[in-house]
Image (cartoon, rainbow, N blue to C red):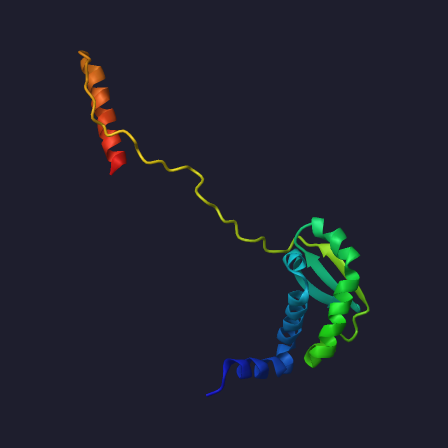
Length: 150
């Protein structure tokens, strides 16, 4: 029985699946970056001997432009370590970053912020009222308090 790794490597070696191989190299480059840059970069692609990085937020653009040397150094290390990525990145001369409108935003985690308190009242109190309407209202309040205690 063949392992999943072997099957994936076989599929990646086929010429009509060369894009899978290319994107796996892009993901390896992204994983080598520091965590704050990994969150910043939405995707990579190569066009006209330039490696483009699509950013998920405009605030990261200036920071990554200042750290292009870091990305170039990691790219050179990746080429020297992973021979299969050498073919993908061999013609890259320049690195550019831009803010992309085609990124998937991180999932929004919504938490219920309504505080939940335990009911302190027991719903047992005397009614010293003679008015029939007020007695009905107080009895409704008693029932609500007892329901909250359950």
